[in-house]
Length: 368
Image (cartoon, rainbow, N blue to C red; front, side, top):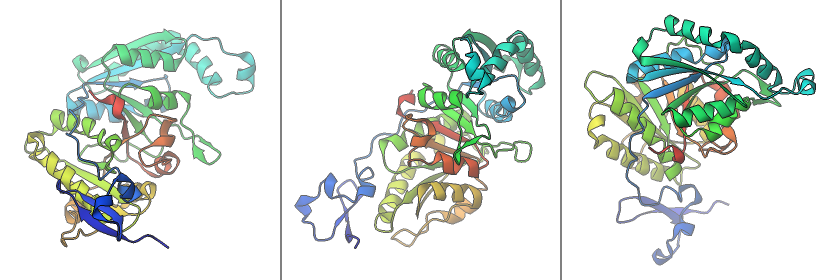
């Protein structure tokens, strides 16, 4: 039988939930409903904007490897950012037994070593093919023991602010295979990564950035994703006439804590609207009940259906309906174990094969 909860409020205006009948003096973090322990904390200041001035696209010389380019070039134009195209040749000797047995990564390593003599001419050709001003683009070709080592070193020493990663359409034991390089960069990159899912098809749905969805659960980890959001707003959307909608999205596990999610999201919305850069931006605050992975996929595919708040006002659902489809999901990750430890748990194997838009991942170490 579920424990009944009663709703309380403190002097800061944030709602708490405790088991019914608990004495007021006994309200502590342990008596707050577990789902909302993070939400009940006193709110921190908004993070400083994380500007995205240098965008890195790692390339391997294949057509599939170029899949992220339409997204990167579009975002570079929106943000007036520099596009950095790079190739890393691995120098470690390939184990012939691993190659013969098709051990993961061995064939790719041989292919990259074979491609090395053509790498510079390939990158030069890309510079001419892409519709980006030459002064907003640069290329590099380096060697390193492994591709991961080379990319991480380049990111750390060249003021890179965002890395584009394309997920391959490989599956292992029913789960999406990230690949060794992609997994390592998601876990170890000192900057955010923008992940392109396998189902994304820019030729069918050209990338724009008019509607960003930001899942939040009240924790400091989740709120770290506000830093790149504010960076995007600072660079591209601080003026009238540039349409943009941001939807703050919360998924409560049950109806007992739903009002607290609604209060929390509206508090974040109010803090954002107080910023000058948000003066011309539509910001929605929508909470729903369910499982976070499924709710994220449904929101992206079909739109967000929020729940009414206690005062009877809907959580800007009609405003969301007029905002159009979601173009980007921006969310936090612990940075441990690749995408298997996203903000809401193991959602990668569920979400990525089921959405067709990019996901920008960040975690607290990315603070500017």
